[in-house]
Image (cartoon, rainbow, N blue to C red):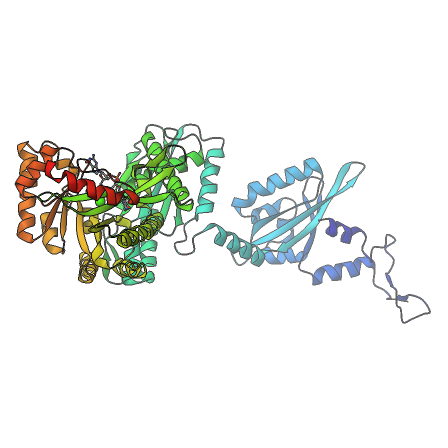
Length: 596
Ligand code: C2E
Ligand code: CA
Ligand code: CA
């Protein structure tokens, strides 16, 4: 603006007398050259006519007095219809308020201003133009306004495009996360948001990753676009809709107080009720959905996001589940976060190590092996069981790091026992479900066993029923076969508590069945007693050894022996002990064998 004003008032041509301009000509030492019969005004007009900016002049109130004839040409309106206030007829109605406000402001503060507006052209199209207006002030009063008018369409479109790209997800055309958060915050900042409730729904598409892997990213991308357009159709234009992350969507809408909040959730769910068709193939995809409500669950936009994220997190622990926020989620989430934090810190400070719990032959009383159980050291409270950090077993990265740390030390312990001739039998190691989700683990495990100088027949791998359910069965069966052929044994942990059925025992090559400690209680009770007896019988028929977990009393050991259970593990024999106590434990259990 400054430069413009300068150019206008102190131009080389400005000659208050209106006399022809004289050019300084350095080659002519006799004096300045002269261009006859051209007034400053003419020259000025020519220059303006060559340039893209079209001048105008208005009175103090903004009523147009004079305009560059090109403006009449452009708009197809005759001079009489453009001057005065007639020009307003050519302004896009959506820009009119802004134009009026700019003029009001200019007249108040007597400062130059500019704005962009769409002008209706003679061909019926609107094009963006930029208007600049400068007051001519004399004695503290505006005498008139002068300014320019310029086609700004290409530049405006380009900057709109840049802005669009910055705010949108390229694939689906929905808002991106940053823009969405900004818009939701904006909603809260609006002064007239009194009587409505704000619903925030977060969706996380299930099973997109396997689809990408199996059918290619192109199919995954198309599915995301379908989801975006179905959400758009279902919720209509009044809702903010965004793709906030790879397979995450978010939507935010206002509802009149007292209206049916669940309907938003149901609509979101319905989007996934029908399969999606891409290139002639049907894909069944679902979503985990979390919802939170203002003012019920949160005070402001940011808190509303947090609470909706809690709800989504809870929903994600199952597949295709919908959750509304409730206060207990915050607590659970906090616990999980602190589990991750504690586990990370303990890992970094090498405060994670295995303890070993013996497994005892129920007939001979001999120690046949140990289960390695994770322990961590609290700086003040000393050795802790796994429970408090068990949330870390659900985090793929941490679970892998914990497994690795445990394994390294188990290798060391075994090597030391071997060097000292300690008859430790077989060591059972635990794994987390998430480890299997990432793909095959057999190769890596065998490599580490070899690198550690151990042989696979010193180890047993404990998997839980969830692993059997979670993983593609063929792949898992193959993994287990590889491990068994190498000499490792496979134990099915916590049997009876999860969803595995007896069918799985046949389908997968399993060596050991660990009967969950829940069945140890009231074994005299007909139900539990019958279950244990049936499991033991089944094991015998399939040549699967049975291990009873959580054996705490001699009576339980006796009943188990009577039912034919092979091995017992539990506090009756010993809790898990540090590696250095294992040799002594084996000796003392051998001495006590007769008492069981
Ligand atoms: P789990 O694999 O079922 O381990 C057996 C749990 O029962 C252990 O708890 C053990 O200390 C406990 N226990 C043993 N005998 C008795 C008994 O007579 N009575 C009772 N009430 N409890 C008994 P811990 O060590 O706290 O481990 C809990 C769970 O943490 C384990 O259950 C396992 O799922 C997980 N975990 C432990 N170590 C690891 C590990 O290194 N990796 C992975 N992925 N998970 C582990
Ligand atoms: Ca176990
Ligand atoms: Ca167990």
